[in-house]
Amino acid sequence: MLTELYIEALLVDEELADLVWELWDRGVIDGGLAAIAWMLLAA
Image (tube, rainbow, N blue to C red; front, side, top):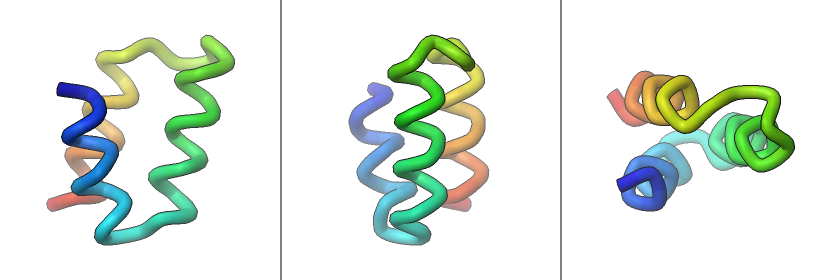
């Protein structure tokens, strides 16, 4: 599910979607927050 949200967010703004991915990958944010960020980007 997170991957799908990430891909949708990439279509809108690649730079911001990647920033959220990096924060999530480093453990700065959890999966729930990453999902919300990507949903907001995709909306």
